[in-house]
Image (cartoon, rainbow, N blue to C red; front, side, top):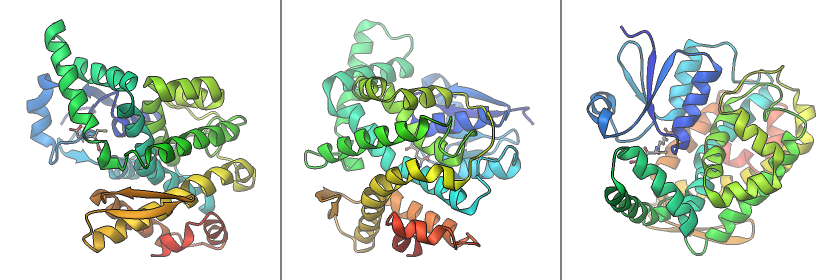
Length: 332
Ligand SMILES: N[C@@H](CCC(=O)N[C@@H](CS)C(=O)NCC(=O)O)C(=O)O
């Protein structure tokens, strides 16, 4: 039996750095292994599907998918908990985790591949990671290959000429809302990192490594910038705050990003999958959004509904979820 976990991932993979920050916060002994051709055989032994992160346990079992990875580790390493004990904050943290993975990923992926400056920055770093010893000619070829492949995949997260301004408006508004919230606390739910921080941060951290969203964060959101850097190696500096403290500045973010955009989007996506449609359109915040359905997201909506159904005391939670426009979707 090995004495530590092995985490196969990449700095440019939001889901990988999310799990790495979790392991760092919890002091879980692990080795970060950059996925490259040099470790491909070892990766193949454990990966069931070709995605990162891949976590290999000391008992030699492979685990994939960042949300269940963290949930299983949390059961094994319960302290310090990433779940606020208060039922309102506890569920909102899980909801924000899901929002980060699903909607935050649109921000990240769109900005990464929309403009030439970001395409070149990202493709350059990915090519260098894949072939660290490549000479200039090989590197240039690899950059062109990565760039072409990824630019042609942005439609997958719903980024297109119609939705691009909506994705960017959502990102800019969210960053300003988060900046106000983080101006008087270290993390989303107070003085310790939560599940919600991890999911949201993985995407915003990655966006921050690309020139265009980096300029927005660095120019407009000093408190988000500090949080982005803090979350690379998170440490508790106190306790979770009561919901009443968090509400004034977290509510606008929940209403505008989760209620006005993410929830109607995820419901329309799930409905389109159930109906076997090739494409769907939905009104989000007064704008028409059209894309091909994303299959994985229907599963994560089911998982989110199961988490909501498991909350025993919903007396404080339900009025709030109704207010932010998320209750009907969670009740299914
Ligand atoms: N739901 C998965 C998503 C993982 C994922 O999409 N990983 C991306 C990188 S961020 C990936 O490996 N994509 C396949 C590829 O790049 O070949 C999770 O939370 O771990």
